[in-house]
Length: 619
Image (cartoon, rainbow, N blue to C red):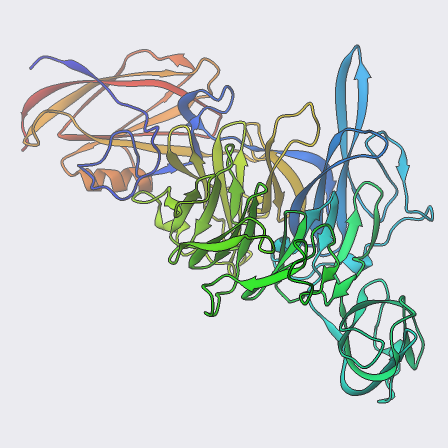
């Protein structure tokens, strides 16, 4: 048989470790690191090195990074929709501002990131202070937890931000207390001024009452050594009560930088150490353990669950389970438009269709698949929801009527399975620029560089990537634009306290080392026949950086693959540059061949062609 040219396809269908070494799909690979199916400069589907990281803001936030949140609202003086980026840490809260300007008829925005308790500017460049012209202290917003553990405790409601503060009981009693005309006294002799009660942080929960008082949460006006004065001076006529003083949820007006406890209007605030909150149908929704709670429609402070059953806007509570059965702890909640609320446990998925006080019902979508953490999900461009379970990546269609569909079934690497919320910070974002679901899985051990994954929806492929600097790994991620003139991209909040976006060709100055294994290929029509790999022809993108091509040839496909993955000394190597290369004469003999492309530069590949001819039986 004469010489023939064989096209070696770039494995655009990504990483697949589930196939045998010889029955594998030539459009997939067993190993790719920091390689994407779309080149970094033009986003063409042709394969190359991945995107890098670029700082979105020069500001480095203080404290341990916790979460990213997008707040969208219509500003009072701008009268247009506007986006704020909120960044939470263990030391404070930061909010982005953007100054709008017009130069030669072109509208531009200049972004800054400032801590709330500093003098900052709004989107028009004006100074912002509180209603008393003083900076707002963020002391009451100091967050606790490891990694992004607090991320599920923050939600946007009616243009403001709600913080479900972790439950802390400052004082509690079971007997010997009274309340009269809003003044609570405790016969136990407690000195309320010495136990750390803060009217800006705590509320009184009256648990059992006598005449003139109702069970519920009450704001504190002031404290004396022997009494707590409530804001509502009409509460109580002197009867005995039981009560507790606990942390209260807070509301933050991002535009005006004002904050306060949510105004309690009925019932007792739900609370818990790991409460998750979301918004749905103009209700604030809480998940505390196995139970979910919904506020009154339009009122985030009303949790009077004994309200009239004919009241369609009343507060409602329930569990993510069949009627009469105990529910599993809720791990995540996702509002899908106006009609659906997804509730996840670790091993089950439920959907609430409609309003539970007005004919809405809870349905089970899966009893085996759930979501691993509050931030392990994202919206797709058409209303679908992607989420990470302990079994891989799943998708739920926009109509929320079918069970979750596995996206990674049969090809998801084991590295993404069994990821838990105790040892990893997991965050998912949908990248609108490249139509990809990006899965960040950052170990919390302080040492390990984690494996993150890019799921390209265009090519239905998975790609592994990592950051050489541990501290650049994300704690949280978000799809965000920030200004009407910018396209939505993916922002990350790194362990080092910088907010970056996926862009550029380096990781904020760090070189990106990329590598992909292509093959193995049978070089003849029979496994008993050796062929001569006489020539190699390559073509990179015209703007590509240089790439090293390594070639492995032998009579054992599995061993060749392992050598290629391990980086053993190849049988042939050559460095190639942008554009079409000169003919590369390899002259290697064997039944199998494996090719490796690797580089420390930004590169893209157009074609790889081998010239082979049979030379006899395998010896």
